[in-house]
Image (cartoon, rainbow over all chains, first blue to last red; front, top):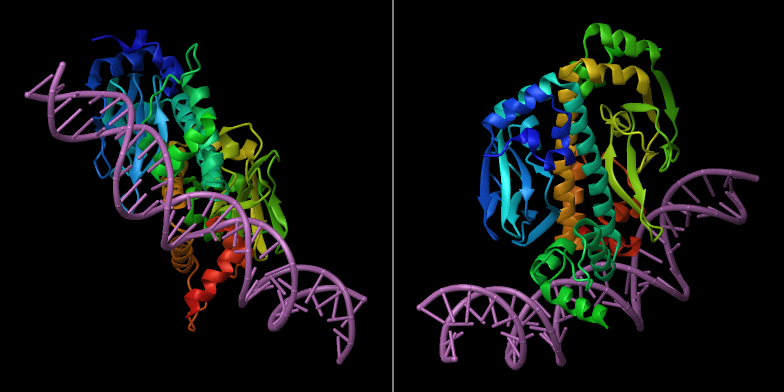
Length: 202
Length: 202
DNA sequence: CTTAAAAACTGATAATTATCATATTTTAAA
DNA sequence: TTTAAAATATGATAATTATCAGTTTTTAAG
């Protein structure tokens, strides 16, 4: 199994502030997992015993609404870490993560990484910064959901996908989402999303 | 000016994990401010140089949407702290806080409290926990905004106000919000909120 | 290659919500 | 107390979005 010390995606997240010694320890206890497209990384209500660091692939992170519809809250890819909240809270996860493409993820047990959170202030500050940034982002999503039309949200989401995942020479997005997933990101019915998408094509 | 050590609202927030010595220092550098109903605590785009601890009164925390409408993200009261994100980020505030009733707030300068954040792991962990809880809450708000009707959101908000602020003997809420504020919380037009409210009264 | 299932699409209709115009009531200032 | 301004309320209409009932296309299994 490859070592965290040499892992490139680590440079993209909070783990970059770990010391060499800490990294070696984390490297020794992590497990690498392959998750096929459509499979679940973790589910709502599940007790997370650590964090997941994404090596490759894309995952949607969602939550069921009380009316039975799935709401996708964000998308994650290479270098992103999920499950960080399990480090500071003993509650079960309120979110579900599902692979949108085949994925490679590293699982780091809570007991191991929580030591670093308590002893390495740089690392803690980095996690704090990430949470603060997530909160700021959540503010923006709430404002958009509350105040913008479905059409505006769809347009902005397509731009966001392009920024985050890029596109190829023929301007086709590097991420493939089903119409249902698109609808579940912007919070609308699948048919409405399809209707507006075909409108955009013109 | 009263002392933080004896302040009751401190028991309600992260400051409770400060040591006696830390508290005495904070107490010496804090300033107490009175803010009248309708006045601004801080504005979007402003550089926050510290955090605000609410002694009394209620404030709405909002953000302008690009279409010029105000979206209220949450309400805060006695014991709540705002501006925590300024401690971990040098960006200007993305939010605005406005007094909904007359308020007493204590301002604690960033330089002073950031020391504690770096040196007192208990305090840091508490701030982390609060942010994790805020994120979880934001998830729920996003799902509600995306998937529920205005009527459902209004009903849930009224229940939330009752839970958070309570009501008197005649079941009148302890918090008074204008129709416009109500509309700006649930993300709808003022007229729609009024329409549904009168519908609920029956 | 054939076939069944899933996904994408279309159009009609109904429900929800926004906008606008205006009236009434409440609040606060002079 | 009077008066102007602000907040609340009402109703008509338009726009947006959801739901339903299908058809076509794509995908994947046998």
